[in-house]
Amino acid sequence: MSDERRSDCVRDKQHLEIARLIVKQPNEVAAQPDPAKLLSDVGNELERFGDLDSASAEFRLAVEREPKNPQFRNSLAWALCLLNRCEEALPHAREAARLLPDDANIQDTLAHAEFGTKNYDRAVHAWEAVLKANPGFMSDKSHVDCLRDKQNLETARSRVSESTKKAAHTP
Image (tube, rainbow, N blue to C red; front, top):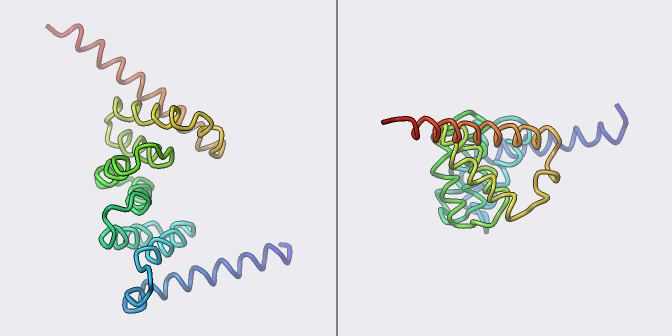
């Protein structure tokens, strides 16, 4: 491992330890000028290190402090989706999309939450909103994420088409 990479790892571990200390010190959070932002920042650090349960708890606290902040709601929804708790994520994703409808990341989170709850027609609608708002969004994401989104979109479209055909043949 290079000295630069080793230094990055040490700094990252220090950031994680700081984030965990802050989580354990709620009075410190309350004393900050923007406690909701601090909670969200801690959540982002915890998510980055794979501690999704703790991250979602921090995002939830940020949302409780600022329920009309679409970014905090989106972060909570995304963490819950990563935990396969899409039912729980869905109301937060929908509210974030209502508050900031033209944001591609928020629409993408909404699409994942809808897909995860088998609301395929709504997932298609959300992914189409992503592409309409930002045609380059899929190519801006990592290749793996982009392929997963395209596969999910095609699966959702296929399921919507199947259900439409079944409804047409039902007497």
